[in-house]
Each structure stands twice: as structure tokens, then as C-alpha cells.
Image 1: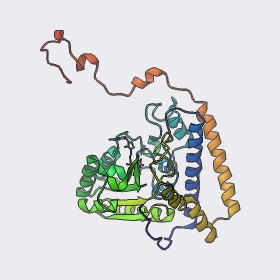
Image 2: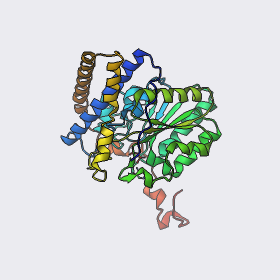
Image 3: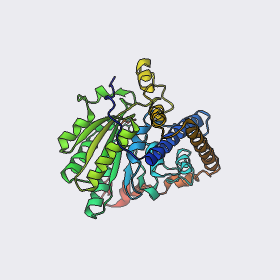
Length: 349
Ligand SMILES: Cc1ncc(C[n+]2csc(CCOP(=O)(O)OP(=O)(O)O)c2C)c(N)n1
């Protein structure tokens, strides 16, 4: 069991930002729990990939980005989607695979994408987003645009070849990208110690010549300020940073996984370090928000969620033939020419 580093002194974040951060945090938590229940009620098929427990790793770094800044993700970044400004109804339509979802029902549930806020729809391949994010950062640099890319992935993704190529390239070219590794200790049922011999995943940055840091990923202000510093650095043309956030997913890899490969003690250790309860204690003790104010905000968030559910559930399904649109493929005649097709050579042109 990896233990989170000792908490550091509370970094300086303006009070208004702390209140906004709480709103995004609580919205992410309540919406995520609600989506789990919707799946269990059979309101949508497939599965659902919850990020409950690791909200501070996505909300903190994303808060404060501009619309033009790009986010590239995988399947567990609902907090980044919400904080970047993807409406709840669009997230739900994606999960429900409805015709009016941003990807018209094409993709895997929880592959959130929303072009209006430069949130890119992920590919299913683990670590593919590191390459896409690096490409976007290269485009920003070539066009001399002052935007940055925030690239999220799990610790499991750091074992794949694409990850190493992307980080090496980003390092060599000083690209404006911040790599955020959400180390939740498990890649599906594979524990982190079986995917790497190193203790800290942030050490990987040394191989690519840019800074790497490990932080307590359940400390919202810390994830926010650590990323903020890395973003300033990236915008100033000083290149990438790798931030490893130590965190934990409370539930299975997805809702069809009972996660019985973990021991109860480990789950107990991490649920006691709930990023939401922890931030609430901080808001209380600093006098930033009273309990009554927090409760009013939660009621508002819950009403927003219920309205989004009603809207998404009244959206139509895509017609079956929609599955063939926007998909690149060869026609059978091109891929498998018949004997009559000439040279007799078979293959892809
Ligand atoms: C190349 C590839 N292999 C396997 C999978 C199936 N798969 C999806 S998510 C996942 C685990 C990824 O673990 P990690 O990167 O740590 O992210 P986490 O799920 O913990 O957020 C796996 C094995 C896949 N999508 N792509």
C-alpha cells in the first residue's frame, strides 16, 4: 500500500477560487455517484467508470484553464470534463449513447469529449491520449499560440510504449504540456507494483529531461497549485512537467467489477482520506463556507443533476446506420480484391 506524503502547508488560493473549486468538486462527486446509481437501475446499458475518490486529481489541475487550453483524457476524468465546462446533460447523453451526444453515440461510455471547451474525445487504447496531447502541444508551439495541454492518464498507462515516445518528444521539443498521472494504485486488477519497479512514477520524468513531482492527490488545493505552477511554466515556453497524484478509486475498475482483488484495510485507509470531506473540513476551519452554505450549494447541484437526467433521458437514440458514419474503413472490394480484379495481388491499398 502506497502511503500519501505528509500534508504540506496550505498554499495560497484566493477565497473565491476555493469556493468555486468546492462547487466543481461536489458537483463531480454527486454526479458520479448518481451515474453509478443510474447504471445499477438499468437506465443505460454497458458499464460505467466511476472516479469517486480521485476527484481532486482532475478538478484541481483543470480549474483556471482557459477555454482554448486543451484537455486530453482517458475514461476516469469526469472531474476534468465538469470543471472545463462540459454541461452535465452532454456528459449524460454520451453515457447514454444518445443521438445528440457529442459523439452521436459512437464511443465507449465515459469517453467524454466536448469540442466547445477543447476537451478531446479519448481513444480506447490506454496511453493513446499522451500522443494526441503531445501533438496538440506541438501545434500550439508551431503556431506560437499561448495555450497549454493538460494530459491525464493512470499509472498503468505509463507502462506502454506510446507514453514513453510522447513524453520523450514533449521533453525534446519543450512543448507546452502538463502530464498528470492519477496513480490510484490499480490498473484494472493489476497493482501498481507489478507494472513498475520504481517507487514514484514521477521519477519517469528524469528520463525525458523535465521536472517530475509526486503529490498527495487527495489534497485539492495542492493538486491545483502544483498544476498551476506547471501550467505557468509550460505557457512560458519552459516545457513539460510530470505530476504524479497519489489517490485511490473507491469502487471497481467499472461498475461490473466487484474489485474483490483489494483488501478491506486498503479500501478503509483510502476512504478515510476522502478528498471531499477533507476540503469541507478546511472550508469550515478557515471560515470560508459555513455548513449551511455548503448544504444549499449541494441542493443546487442535485437539482442541476436531476434536470440533466430528465433532458438526457428524453433524447432520442441514434438510428442503427449512424454507427457507420464518421468511421474510416476500406470497402471489401478494396481490401480483398477478387481474382478478376487484375494482378491478383491481395491486400490493403
Ligand atoms: C492497449 C489497451 N490495453 C488494455 C485495455 C483495457 N483497459 C482499459 S482501462 C485499463 C486499465 C488502465 O489502468 P490505468 O492506466 O492505471 O488507469 P485507471 O483505470 O486506473 O484509471 C485497461 C487494462 C485498453 N483499453 N487498451
